[in-house]
Image (cartoon, rainbow over all chains, first blue to last red; front, side):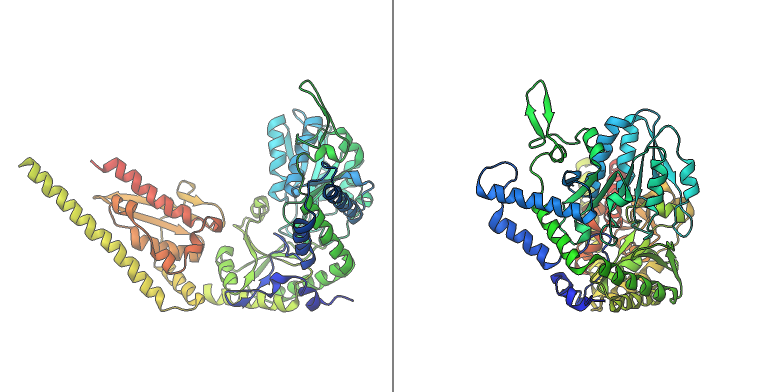
Length: 406
Length: 162
């Protein structure tokens, strides 16, 4: 495999730093990934030499900025293999995409008594916006449960459909359990009943090949900052027919054709959904992150991360007093666990002082904790620049925690 | 006469307040000294773990939703009793390091008059390097815990000051 992780690590300046005099072991990639120099330089270059608002001015810089922004849209389209550029809407992130969609879709299609299907392993971002919609429209949520291994119960899923079902919204990959959900099957079952499906790709887009046409999902959302891009930029992909049908979720400049005090007509796709001055710098830098991923090769990245996943699973299986949550057959490189009855917060404090950055707590997925009847977990989530050596340090930290708290 | 008695009374209270404020600071200095011998973070944490064991076990009746301060990360329960003009705190946490820090806060503030608690400046937290554990971003409930300790003092002060 042509994947030299030591060389790749040099692309990420932050990986050279120390915390508490120890080398940083960054295993909190599920929260956000670090940025390669090309992305950092891109942001700096845009602000230094070509900053200008897009789609407004006739002047040189504005034209150049607009061109870069639209090229970024094209690159995102290629990245997830959407059919049209105008099916790519730039947002502020996954949360922004879902909130926008719940409003727009809800306005048009959800009424009193209607139902929305989600899973029991959603991030709060794919629960709360739907709950807000349900409250507004007097609709309700139906939940697909999962088994102890963290796999969705597909039989139960099918039972949830009825004539009141309006949309299915599921996470592609669980941010706590690492489960890769059978989204193809989920989409197929919904489409048999003419129900559209939203896929939350926040935890999948940086690990898996995404082909929205092959998946045939109706909406796909993700964030830039979890895939080596900047914060504050994300994507809402929607099939053209849906995006044409649903109303905009924000009003403002650029998203309109004509405005009079009597009536406003909306601009065409994708501008209808991009009100105000968009985060064009974020979009342009996101393109740089995608190009970086393309250069390394998504298959190579996946292979490297698979190795890390297998190694961490092997190491934890051979460590006493470890309880792993999420043992699905199809998983990505996220592992959630607890050490004995030690509170994850206590463990996290010790990990931190050893330079190991993990996330502890409920990971914005409290229903998952309720499912296992636990307060929280320790979550180590891996990215393309992590190494087996770092997993060894994680295991040393686990031993240290055990010696201190047992 | 009356004025004189009142004067004596006021004088007495002031004296006692001053003496005990000093005591809060004395305890804080003691803690700073205790932590001063550790130059390694792990030793500090080991000491907090030890302190957590000294915190008296609390009656399950106080480990209920009503006294729960934060559900985020570690759980923390706090209850305050008022007897003979003094506040006694009863607290617990399901995380050990949090419990160790709670033991320190109780050692400094428990068994005192509401006014003293309200006025206390807890400089020891900074000095022993635990500030980060009390930052709002840590969401471990300790900042809320400290605020709740002070709120109990404010409430008892308002209720019994006459």
